[in-house]
Amino acid sequence: ALTSQLGLADPAIRAVVIDMYARWQEYLADGVRALAATGEISADTEVAGATTAILTTVAGGATMLMATGEISYLEVALDEALGGLRRV
Image (tube, rainbow, N blue to C red; front, side, top):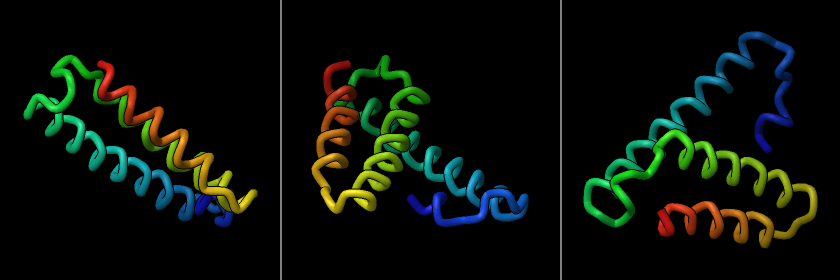
């Protein structure tokens, strides 16, 4: 959602956005690892895949929210992404 409003053709802006997403994904990875360490989710959880799913869910859900005014897209997608962690 945020990135659609930025001029990603500008290399400096693109670098900032790439860094922002990379840091966000690393924070999510820290959280997933912590959940696995405490046994709240499976220790075998594939961290990179889980964090990519969550980050993509939030970005896509936010875009749908902005386009439609409906938060249900984000809610359902996030429930599914986080449910995937619980099922593992």
